[in-house]
Length: 368
Image 1 (cartoon, rainbow, N blue to C red):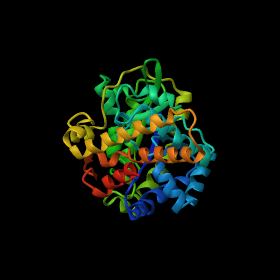
Image 2: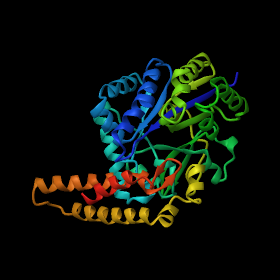
Image 3: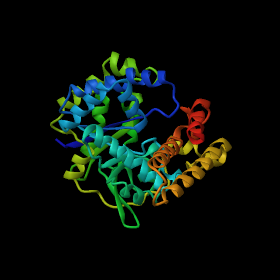
Image 4: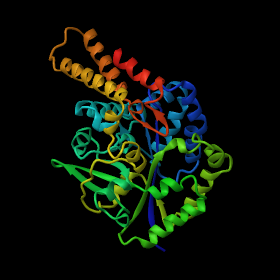
């Protein structure tokens, strides 16, 4: 029987300024029950990205959750991904902030889980061709984007059963394509129908050790409308995980690093400016169009850039007057990074720019 690897992962995020009750609801309906079920199935290897905002909230409100994650990391069931600590749209911030934010989350994961991440999540999968250099300078080796990015670069869908290498000025980065078919099927189609998707992909693949990747919003497992009943009350996730175990002779679950270690890239490609297909519709093809469409977004963005530059200029001073001044500078840097949280800068079906509480939180940090 043909075999295939399933690279399964969750991206979990709550924006700066969101109500604490929303964090708690997401925790109770999505994050914790998902972790609890995967913890019971150690043979299922998977991948997790949480933003720094969410990690800090979990640490302060439900610290035992970090213990569960640490246990899965220790038994090599789980790979943790890094990313911008405050989930910025990477192309919209200076390279110094890209590198600083990623390294801040790298350090957090190292401190809390004794784990050094190799890969990262790009907020809203907004990609521009210059990114490999700052990402590699942040010690990242790979990221995940949508299959849509790859088809825009000229690759056929049938060629997306692995990962590719991209580069910028000699800085090379591996990129995995997220399957849109799986993104729309999980957890909305019956688990048995999802298994059929793997069967078709395995049978049709012409490359050695093919894989399918799904890395998507963790909130769709319980927080999105009507999903809690389907995923947990009616047992969708438990059934799906059990089917993966039952079919483990031909569906292998691995972490990204495990797959990269065992399998070479399919080749090299160059990916144009892109995001997932829905984002391209909302932005009329290019994320930066939000800055032209909404002056409220552009005002925040330009204030943020001005303050970022001021902080960087202070950082160039070789000897600061005192430790107190150095501490204030670090606090200022953190406020600027928090003011780069992406959600208030754009609008899709989830709100964002139109939510005053989120724009207010960005301005509160930038003003501070």
